[in-house]
Length: 213
Image 1 (cartoon, rainbow, N blue to C red):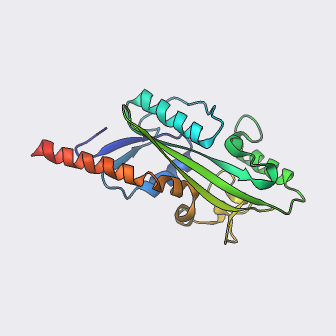
Image 2 (cartoon, one colour):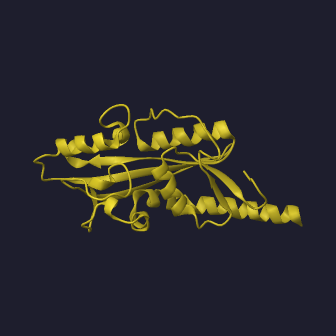
C-alpha cells in the first residue's frame, strides 16, 4: 500500500480528466495520501456492464485493484431526469450512442425535453474504495437541480452546461471548480470515504515511525 515511508498510494480509477481533476482537488488535503492518476499507474479499461452506479463503481474499483495490486478509488456517476423516467442514468456517457460525444448527449437531452415544464433532475455519484485482500467500501452522493433550456458556461464537463443546482441560477459549467466542488455529488460521495482514507494514512504513518524507530 505504501510508495514512500508514511505515504499511502491509492490509484485513481478513472481515465476521465475532468473527474480526475475534481477528485484530486476534493481529496488533496488528506496528509499522506498520494492519488496515482492513470498517467502515473496505467490500467486497462473496465467495461461498465453494471445496471446501477453501485455495480459499475464496484466493478471498476475491484478490477483495477486486481490489476495493479494497489488500493483503488473509483466512481461511477450520471444524470437522472424525472421527465425521462430516470434516464440517461448509468448510460449517461453513451446517451446518444457510440463513440462518447458530450455535445451530442447534451443536444439529445435538450431535444427530448422540448416543451417539458417539469425539468427536475439529479446528479448521482457512487465512489468505491477497494483494498486488495480486504474490503471494498462504497459511498453515494446526490446533487439535485433542474435542466436548463440551453447550455450555459464553459467550465466542467459532461452535462454541466445544462444542470442548475437547486437554489441557484447558474449552471455547473458557470461555476468555478471550487464552487462546484463545494456542492457536487462527487464531493458528497468522496466525503463518505474520507474517514477510511484517513485511517489508511494514519496506519501507514504509525508503521513508518515504527520502522524508522
